[in-house]
Length: 245
Ligand code: URA
Image 1: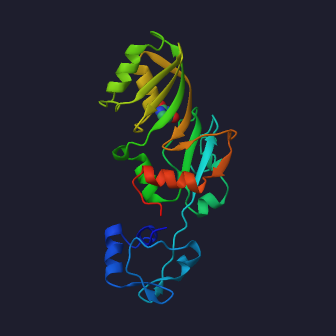
Image 2: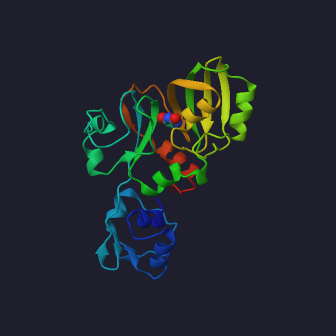
Image 3: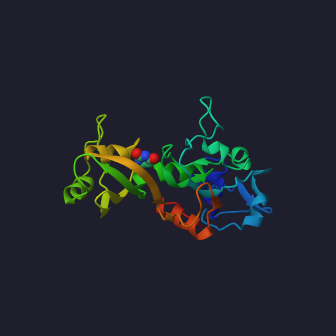
């Protein structure tokens, strides 16, 4: 990983701040002053990074995906005071120590891909509408008004009034059947899919997230959690404008 990203991730300030530290010859590795913010630092060397005469406590960034099962609240406290099951009941204990948290929320009844990380910069960018990270859902509906049609596709593409004084951003709707579709959004407003469907005269009967940015749910079983592959992490950082090297 690049020196400036390691330092910024370790809480020494923004990328701009840490570049200044490097420029001022305050960062060293095994006694040698480092001058290039873009220098790649091998994983096994990171513990020998120093700021002035103090070792830098390098953060460990971890990235996971979960196939979220239905019936669990996206919350990290374990079974909540109302007795409802939460994702905190499903994750291993070290998620709490390492402060690994879900990226955004899925509703209690929603299933599918949920990312987890303790990388604050990435977490923020994955959620920020500024980075337009696509989220794709498979949506089944009860038809209250009409089945999926081309007018729905156009309305989703333009963005629509979804109530509470908000509009959805432009999205893509692919019709899979009269009551089934695939919807891609580039933002994540509160209950956005359900509010879009309601505005289209439909009620969601099942909602499943297939992908988030470049990360695609595979054959993981509901409740299964796995570490992302290095290639997946790289693609995700790139999608968020972060330099993986
Ligand atoms: N939109 C919703 O309405 N619910 C979800 O769980 C995710 C997106």
